[in-house]
Image 1 (cartoon, one colour):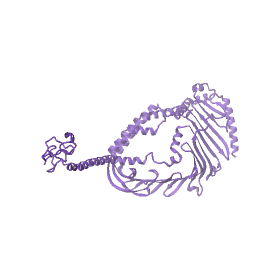
Image 2 (cartoon, one colour):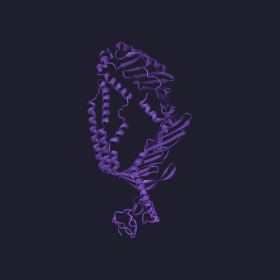
Image 3 (cartoon, rainbow, N blue to C red):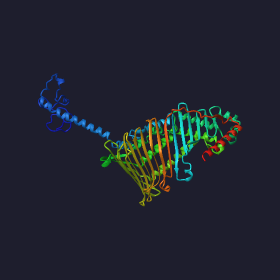
Image 4 (tube, helix red, strand yellow):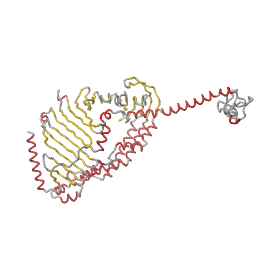
Length: 595
């Protein structure tokens, strides 16, 4: 039979149309006239009769029969909607993209940050007022001439006061427990001061903040010499002043982090690549994660050659059109140009054209070279196919890929894979491998592996190894480090080894203590030993050093070096000669002290 309302086929004898929900029986058992819908489970609703009883002709028990199928239908709709919503959230393409993002996720645990506050300390070193020192002492050397300088030391100190736009650098040379020579440099917005107390009692001053051209013109000796050689100190003064402004302000030339953010927001390259890639579910694969076997979902991904070329092309257009990048380059070349112009006649160097012209020429050159590169890719590159495996927590378990490229008429097969075995972060325990194979069967392979373990407040161990194999030979580098808690400090050991096959061809090792006076604010490393070893050195080290380095907030005022002021532009020839004699005599005395 057909429903008189929706005209669809339904079962004979139906009392309600399963498709449109209208009642089909009247009070006397006949069919309803068109337009009478099922309301309240019958042909007449309670609202229409004004009664609370069941509608005329309806058995109360019969009415209850429809509650179950109606509720079941509603539940089915809800479940179906939920499944659909879940399916939308579990879009394979987004799953794959998020899995790759998990590899470099910023929120991952960083032992260095948790132990030392490395992230915050790094920010302060670049933007806040800080001070620090590095010192090294020669302990021994296999070369007899160098070994005669054992106990010789070098110390470098730095202070910078961002708020007051001034900074200083000091150098110290020692031998046999004696301080042989120190050199202090100070500069701010107006002046540069240099002093070498061991050689001269003077503090040599250049005031580049007040009418430098006038000072040069009035200079009785140095100004005349500089003019003869064509040097201009004005460029040097402006260069230093600009550098101080950049250090004190928020502006930073070639800010790669900001450039990346502008790229993500302003370029369609990444979105285009996402849209072009195809992703389909494939078979699961077992991975060992945190030392347990885990079945991980598989996805087959294809990125076409055209999509990759489009991605590179759109990215190229963004970077070459970025106005901030252009401006940074021009400003940088202006600074370099001023320095070069200051020494143009002396060294025969100079800017051949304006910074703006250099920027335009370099950008045009980059455009042309990139066009050639894309054309070569179009001729040689093939599609990239990969299988991506994702853990239950949506993080990457591993992936493998393959492609091909035609290079100078030879087809090169490219294969690779990576696996992430868990740990304190995604890179703690992983392996990666890439192999290129030519038509003759010869291969070039690159491999990487890392293992690491971290126990908060107790220890951190890492091992990293990278290897290149080609033509039956292999070369590599390995790095092993350990940190063990020692009260309020950490005992550390570091071993960097260069490999040929399985043999070491040289190594650099160090051990000592890392102190954290204030986490994220200051750090001190005492290097008890720094050893450079080589098979040529036999059983002992080729050279051994000791030393320390530290950095922290500025606690001392940045001051002008002590000494009798000596204005290098105002001084006469006779005053320069007197300083020369003083330096010669003190230098001779230093040589005698070292005998």
